[in-house]
Length: 409
Image (cartoon, rainbow, N blue to C red; front, side, top):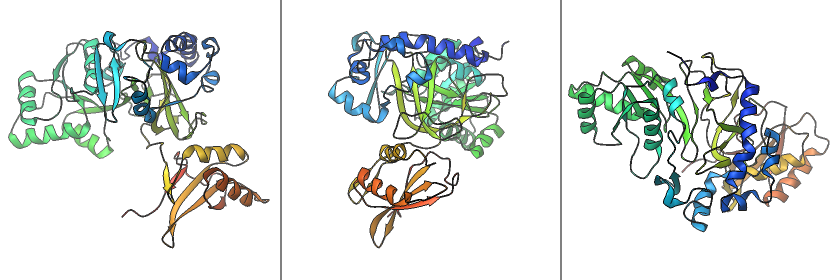
């Protein structure tokens, strides 16, 4: 039996780039059938969007803006190509953000993540993601069906009923959050119930610390995780190697400087931006608000696509200082005006019961730079702040450009 879901997983990098960017102009042209994408992308020629450099010139669509855009242009902000009445399901995530599901099999491209986690045709799978409004359960259920698995539509809650189903159907796989899997196993142990049939899990939606992964493994469940958002489905997933997350095939992932759409060098932490080829609800440079970084090299498992480190925090670092908002894109604007600088970080603190700002900037020399930076900081943010020049490479590579260090409470 093959250890790969399909041949795409071990193709060369050059072949993958040709596949993705050879199809991107057609995908962008298809997206432009939707009024929302026409408004957002403006007067562009889709035929010119055929490389990473060309894609990086397009504006990002921030997920955080979707609630506002969907209110202005209901129900989906105009970003759907397929009309609502022709969708399979109409769903709602917290925000609220509304999403359509099309009729394609494995619409969230999660089947390869399940396969990498050991799920196979004929498995019985216990799915505890919520079936009420939100798309997570349906993304994973459609993937399990695409693999040929049967699904117990458990949803959340009713732990006793879930243990009844597990004892009766004896699922070999679990889908849901890692902490709820622990709850199920804990309750089964306390009540003398049999949940030992569960041998593998694909988890998402919550942190999976090494201690919890080990505990679940010691109890007989090998757990891998995936990273997904409602708009595009699975973006990256773990394999048995458990060394980073492998980017899904048929999507394009960029890591950009927070507050901008500018790609960062490989290895630097930045915001995850995703382009998907979903024919019903395409996404062109969706800025997820989540942070990660590219890992060097390919996975030891043999899958050749780019790896990312997984979730590394949120990109929206907006802080309110003296009653005014300071945003990451403002720090990015300062960086553009001073290209000779390395990393920048604005620290927000309290001084004498008042908000205070200090812009830390990597530079090997001053030559009046501190004064110019202070003036630019005030011009861009409309707030006064100090400037501290630090040695190149001394600021952390964590993607954080605004650090709110004020005490809580």
